[in-house]
Image (cartoon, rainbow, N blue to C red; front, side, top):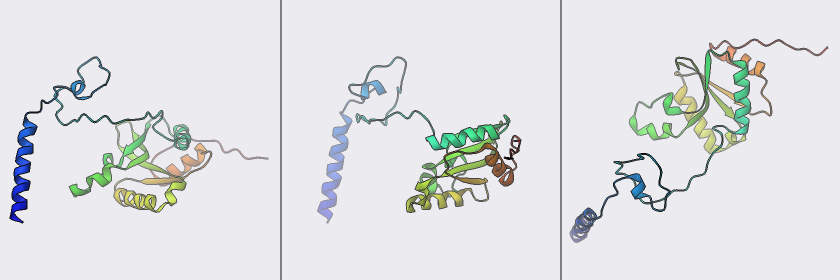
Length: 189
């Protein structure tokens, strides 16, 4: 067993010594092969990058089509004194007391957060679609519920094809201290 440890230690030392002779890139542009040169000073003095090129694809919106429908209803329901934020990290709302749980909290995003103009958090809104019936998603929802409990008001809306602004306003006024726009009741004769 002692011999194995010695071989590993010697191998590590040799690897570190050989790694010292490898020239380090001086900027991000130097470290990414075959990337187009950009104007400006991008990423100079970065030392924790590699030559691995990771492909990405563009998203056109922060929210899904159904989330945008709720967003538009929220816009109509809320007066201009409120701000609607989309795709907010749970970590921006609460921080675990024990640092080891940070990554679990950091990875979750809330569909919407309503604040006043001074960014005071007034409500957190989640839109529950069919994926919220999945076991993993239910575990995630339970974590979010527990994380926000006693800190911020969480309101869950079930997914619909259309969100009536007056109905959204009624829920917000019933569940929070938010005062929404008034809507005339229209009754069929």
